[in-house]
Image 1 (cartoon, rainbow, N blue to C red):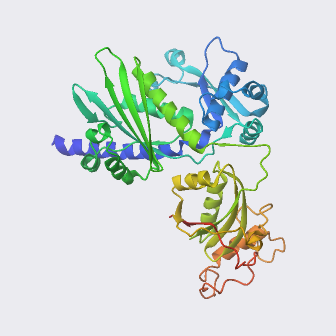
Image 2 (spheres, rainbow, N blue to C red; image 1 turned 180 degrees about the vertical axis):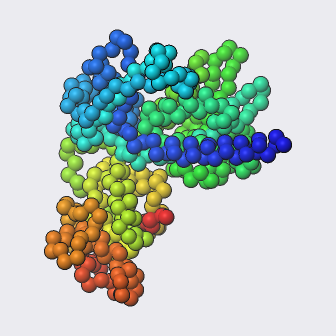
Image 3 (tube, rainbow, N blue to C red; image 1 turned 120 degrees about the vertical axis):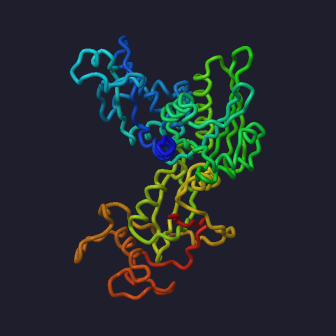
Length: 439
């Protein structure tokens, strides 16, 4: 009679782990917020300074940002960048708040005071760019963690259920640094695909094969062991973009070691993808991009928001729409390779291989009139009969007319697009990069 009950609990636990692993990937949305525990001897000015440093670490991606020569001048403007702040009272994680009544003295005595503040994203980004420091956008690679530990002479892959304290350190430090993590289930399917021996032997093919199940863009393997002298030793291997980056850490304190490893992960990701603004950027780095399979406004809005949050993109111009195709002129920072890599790490766009386009002798094809983006209605549609229809609205309406979406119309062929599309189709418009919108 006990076996079915145990099986039900196991399934429930597995489902809970799935939710935790999936929800953590969305934790990068609060990059401009900070919540810190209030010590008795700290003033509000000191709390603001500590919170400001934390936000800069998340936004720039670099843990040593306070050592920058530009940091003192940024800190002097911290209060001007505050949007809102408050004090919260909450229980430490070790205290069971359900055991105390709402108004009891025992409950009040265990509550901790926390300081929460949110800074204005636009002001913070401008301050950082003017100081020519890196800015890391909200779109960040999702890292899958494979954790193995040597215990009593055995090397074992361990899940967050088996080692909750270890995974709690991973979660808290990743949240502090503003990076998403995914944790494997380590169920029978995983156990058939990967083992601790693969982690210890650096068998990257097996690791990447097992990682496909989770669709994470980056995989991180961690192996941990404790020597006879009590020192903890760890090996960290980061598999990303076809390359492997490795580092070793040692420490007497296991918690400090694991947190330091996640810090190193965040620093390495930031060095790869955070972009430094330049006061002398003349915007000459442009590329024309074609994106297919955009069939309605909701998909367009998701695409547009995604691209505008990429750190490598300085500006984005919607050039035209053609049936289910959207054409953008992207002005990017640094080099094109960084742009391609950042797009590749996301899961929204799938690349289409194209032969390289030579624009050097085709100046006419490089001249495009951008669609006006300002003043567009929130929904992207106008009321019937309205004369104040923005260029963006017209272009987006043209998307919905693809393949006879307009009532009573027949499906359009590749050469029969709607005649009232806001941006005239330029047959010379040859994109250098092409992607498919994934669904």
